[in-house]
Amino acid sequence: MGREGGGASGRGRCVAGPGACRRRPPVAGLGGLGLWLQPGMADSAQAQKLVYLVTGGCGFLGEHVVRMLLQQEPQLRELRIFDLHLGPWLEELKTGPVQVTAIQGDVTQAHEVAAAVAGAHVVIHTAGLVDVFGKTSPETIHEVNVQGTRNVIEACVQTGTRFLVYTSSMEVVGPNIKGQPFYRGNENTPYEAVHRHPYPCSKALAEQLVLEANGRKVLGGLPLVTCALRPTGIYGEGHQIMRDFYHQGLRLGGRLFRAIPASVEHGRVYVGNVAWMHVLVARELQHRAALMGGQVYFCYDNSPYKSYEDFNMEFLGPCGLRLVGTRPLLPYWLLLFLAALNVLLQWLLRPLLLYAPLLNPYTLAMANTTFTVSTDKARRHFGYEPLFSWEESRTRTIRWVQAVEGSAQ
Ligand SMILES: NC(=O)C1=CN([C@@H]2O[C@H](COP(=O)(O)OP(=O)(O)OC[C@H]3O[C@@H](n4cnc5c(N)ncnc54)[C@H](O)[C@@H]3O)[C@@H](O)[C@H]2O)C=CC1
Ligand SMILES: CC(C)CCC[C@@H](C)[C@H]1CC[C@H]2[C@@H]3[C@H](O)CC4=CC(=O)CC[C@]4(C)[C@H]3CC[C@]12C
Image (cartoon, rainbow, N blue to C red; front, side):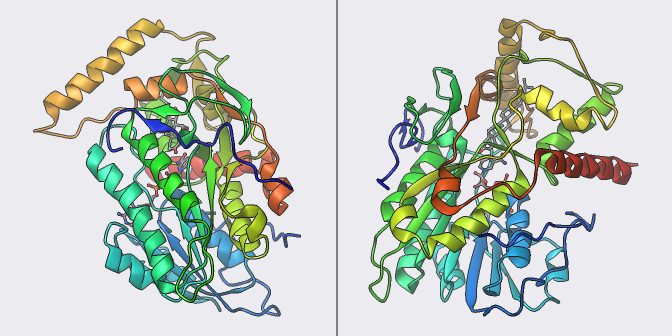
C-alpha cells in the first residue's frame, strides 16, 4: 500500500501567533462509578515486558487511555503516568500486577521529560493545554503544546525510545479561518488548513514536529516510529464542557436555548473509542512501522452526525434538559456581537478576574462550521473497529451526567 497523506494533512499555516484485538468490554466508569474492570486484569499468560509512558495521563482523555491500557494491553509491565497534576484515583491502580508509576512533572521541562521517558518502550503523548476560551496566554499554549512535544521527541531520541503516539486534533485541519465546511472528509480530503487561533496553531506545529521526527535515529541507532491521532470533538465520562452545559441548563430551569442551526454537522467521537485507538495504534506501530510510521489518523466511531447542540441533547435530554427552538433564537449577527463583547469584557476584567465564557468569536465559528469525518484508514492500517457502539457510548455518557447531577445535590 502506498503512503497516505495529502489533502487534509493539517500541515497548515498559522497566520498569526506562535505559531485481532482482544476485546474485553469494560464493565464499570470513571470517577468512582466503577464502570471498568480492576486494573491489571490483562491476560497474565502473555509476557508482560513493555514499559509505556502516558503524558497527560490524568486528563479527560489521558485517564481513559491509562485505564484502557491496563485493561487491554497484555504486554504491559510498567505504566508511567506523567502529568502536571496527579489525580487521587491513581492510588487504586497501584494494587494490580502492572507496576503503575505516577510522575508529577511538566512537559515544558526537558530534564523532567527525559527522566520519565528513559527506559520506556512506547510514549503516548496526550498532555496539552486545551484552551479556546482565552484562559491562558498564546505563549503558554505554545510552550506546553509545541515545546512540550519537542521535549518529548528529543527525550525519545536521547534515551532510545522508539515508538511515539501523539494526540493531535481535528483542529489541525479545521475548521479554517474562512469557515469552509469539511463534510464527511478523510485524511486525504483537500482542505485549506489555515489557522489563527493559538490552540489549533500549536496543535498543527506539534503534529508537524512529530511526523517529521519519524525515522530519526534514536540512541542505539534504530529509527523512531511516530504517528498522530486526530480526534474530533471528544465526549464521554469526564467531559468538562458537557458538565458546564448541563449546569447551565439547570440554572435556566431545565432549558437550553438553540444558538446553532441544526443543519451544521459537528464531528464527535466517544472517549472510550479514542482511548482504544491509542492503545491499538501504540501496539501495532511496533509491528507495522513501515506502513504506519509518519501517518495521521482521524479518530472516529459510529456516533451520529449532528449539530453540536443536538448531539449534546442526546445525553442532556434524558437527564431532564430541553433544547428550546427549532432555529437559533438569536440571529447570527447578534451572537457575533455578544461574542465580541465577551472578548472585550475578558480584556477589561483581566486585572481583576478571569472571565472566560463559552461564547467567543472562535467557539462561535467552530460551532457554526460543518466539520465531519468519514474514513476507514485506521481500520485498513491497524484493524481498528470501535470498541463501544453508539448505544453503549450514549448510555455510559448519560449515566455519567446523571452521576454528576447526583453528586451536585
Ligand atoms: N477534548 C477534546 O475534545 C479534544 C482533545 N484533543 C487533544 O487531546 C489531548 C487531551 O485533551 P483533554 O483530555 O481534553 O484535555 P485535559 O486538559 O483534560 O488533559 C490534558 C492533561 O495534560 C496535562 N498537562 C497540561 N499541561 C501540562 C504540562 N505542562 N506538563 C504535563 N502535563 C500537562 C493536564 O494536567 C491534563 O491532565 C490534548 O492534547 C488535546 O489537544 C484532541 C481533540 C479533541
Ligand atoms: C455557545 C456557543 C454558541 C456554542 C459553544 C460550543 C463550543 C464551546 C464548542 C463547539 C465546538 C467545540 C470544539 C470542537 O469540538 C473541537 C475541539 C477540538 C479540540 O482539540 C479541543 C476542544 C475543541 C476545541 C472543542 C471546544 C469546544 C467547542 C468550541
